[in-house]
Image: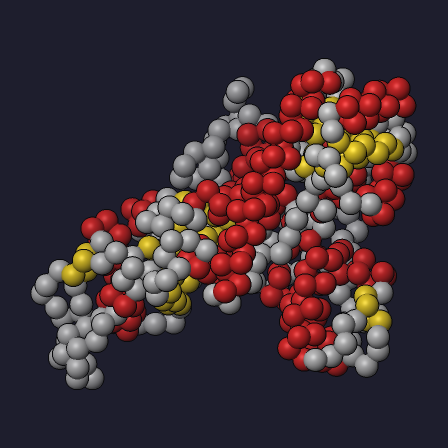
Length: 461
């Protein structure tokens, strides 16, 4: 069978054939393509382990080929004769494993061997982890996009560090609770209890009682002693959902517990010690809450040991078809309805839609379609089809002499940051970006990034 199968996409036939010959001599199966269109066709028709890609294709952007390859979980090596830092950043951010100036054949073979060997080991570990999760009834996170792969790679790094506190951030519906279960049931604490507390809409007294328990007579209706979730979670995990909604008084008690792993029941006088991992989640911007005085800064730093951000579905290019197929299988098993084919036009609409409710919205939509559809081919999923948002008429007019897009982007970024008083999250809302995207552009344009308000004057880096 050989070491694996590789697709080589290069406009230069001589270079393409040279790389293919070297790979075959090194034990790989090699297939070549000289255009974007042919490469995309071959990717759909055949299975590969890796892609070697040279930018500068005659019929379109090579980035389209990289995205299609990453959607199929291929390792990607980009080779380019132009030592262009911006191009390298662009391809690596899109999921390329390596960006190389044209290497000698032995160097390329060595890089490819290491990538695929590491890929096989990672695959074996992930398969074992997924089997463990399935035994505990926890579904895997579905997705091959770079954004999801970054999350899964980080999970692999921290899942066995079972004492480390994790803070999961992300919009509603992105799967923060699923990630918390993966960290618990996929790690060494899987045999211990998993206790989940949502911090929303509980008074200080009730929340403290739920967390730390209470002694008999501690307050009205406390007729017996009660253990709290912290105590019940001994040896396992405590998941605090919507931590941004916790009141300041309870935050102080939680901080003490995180620092000392000790607590007192409400009305109690004796310190109790437990061995518990804490995972917290929020859809709110905790840094902004800290600035406004709504969240303790010391607690934020204590929680933010390992931060993981769940990406919104609109930033997971290529994942929608995978999720649709997954949910069709899930609801086929649950409803005993036949699996539906998806009309290509509808699938394109689903991919273009912005999904404000994220994966939860897509899941609910597919469930509704499975229950209500009387057709074998699904062409509609609601009375009003999801569609790409059409922007209003642009307020900007292109001058006859044209513009420099980077100058325009930098100017708009500065305007947004000034309007938001330096707050990155609010500036991002004005520009349709998240905070990480704002920070990336600030660094790109040489703007200082401070820990508190994230914004300073432009400087040369």
